[in-house]
Image (cartoon, rainbow, N blue to C red; front, side):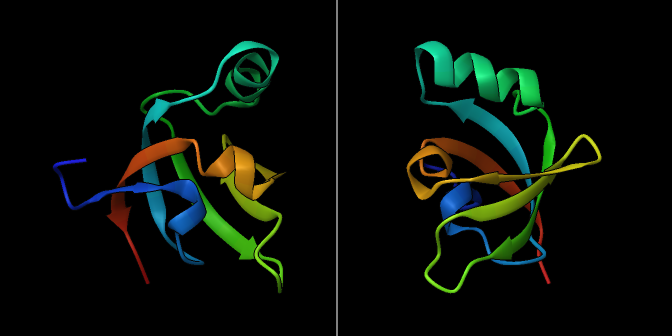
Length: 83
């Protein structure tokens, strides 16, 4: 991660807008996330984190989806905007 604007989704704060650059997942989980809209180039907004940080709600393709820390820690993107 040479670019300081590249972060893992799990590290995003509420209100951050992140443009996905890579998914470091394989198999069924990768296919599931791709089907839900977590594709390279997609804009993802961090909507809400639970009190213990797991799960985290993201908005992608006009849909709110909750992901576990395990999944969101394997998706990287460029921080586009933040509050």
